[in-house]
Length: 151
Image 1 (cartoon, rainbow, N blue to C red):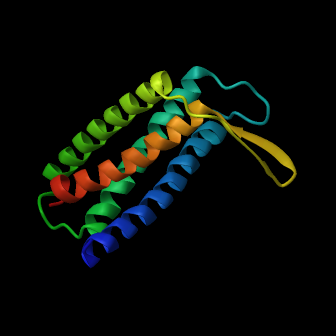
Image 2: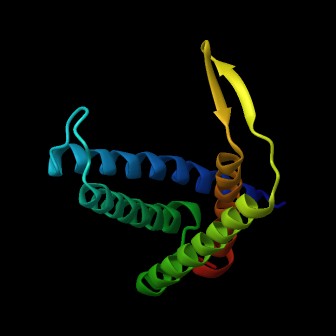
């Protein structure tokens, strides 16, 4: 693995962490302040759906800007790259979703049980399949962006 590849992968990971935080904050902001949902009040499906869409849109745009400028340092046509970025996102998302569904249907992964701060947690097979999908998506999306979107 080349030094440039490793640096880009590391930067991509940093952008991903901050992007996840931004997405979560936007979703929380929408639900708290736009839909005024406080405390134990039941969330409407509209509030959840709209908040999720706005949060992920903010995350997608943030990810494009930072990966384009900082991770891959691209100076090519922004509009073309943005459409490639969206296409790569959709392809990777669909492939990871198919993988998660396949794993959930066919894999016999045992659940993991552990204690953390005197509280018992169980990672079910379904959750472990989701985690596998996240890792798969992240690796595939990095490669698509490196060799297709921002090449």
